[in-house]
Amino acid sequence: NAGVMQNPRHLVRRRGQEARLRCSPMKGHSHVYWYRQLPEEGLKFMVYLQKENIIDESGMPKERFSAEFPKEGPSILRIQQVVRGDSAAYFCASSLGTSGYNEQFFGPGTRLTVL
Amino acid sequence: KQEVTQIPAALSVPEGENLVLNCSFTDSAIYNLQWFRQDPGKGLTSLLLIQSSQREQTSGRLNASLDKSSGRSTLYIAASQPGDSATYLCAVRVIQGAQKLVFGQGTRLTINP
Image (cartoon, rainbow over all chains, first blue to last red; front, side, top):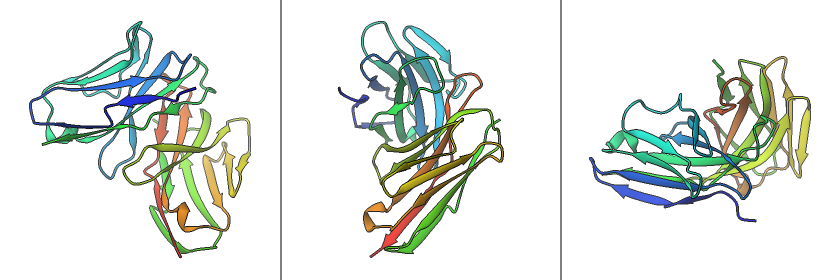
C-alpha cells in the first residue's frame, strides 16, 4: 500500500517559468491538502481539495498559484511565472474522509528552487 | 486564529539524557495534535497523534501528552540518542473550516555523543 507520492522531488526553474507539482494521494483517499515550507520557517497551509472541488484556498497566494484535483489522476499545484520567493518545499497530505479525526498522511515533498 | 508555539527553538543535550519539548496552542477547538520529526532536507515523519479526547500517547521511547484546556502538549524523549537529532514539529488540526493542520516553528534538537 503505497503512501502519498509526490513528483518531482526536486525542481529547478528560472524566474518567469512555470512549475507543476504533482501529488498522488494514498489509495482510497479523496482529500488532499497542500502545505508550503519556506526556508527556516514552519509549514503553512495553502489549499484543501476534494475530487474535482477546491474546498478552501485561503492559504494560497492570490496570484500565480492554482491547484486542481481532477476526477482521474494526481492533484496538481501550479505556479506560474515563478519568482525567487517561491523557492520552498511543497508538501502534500491526504486523508481518508471528512472527519477531522482522520490523520493526514504526508508525502516526501517537492523542493522548488527558482534561479 | 489558531497559533502554535514551540519552546525552545533549539536544544542541545548530551546523549542519554531525558528531555521534554513543549508545544502550546491558542484555541482549544481542535480535533487532534500531532508530533512530527523532520530531518534536514527531508519530509515529515509522524511520531504520535493524540486525539482531543485523549491525554497521552506512547511509542517506544517517546511519550506525548495533551492538555487541551490549557492549550499545551509535551513530547518526552527518554534516553536520547544521536539518531534523535532532528527538528520536531507540533501541529494541531483545527475544527474550523478546512480542518487544516496548523504547525509550530519547530524545535531543532541536537544530541551530542
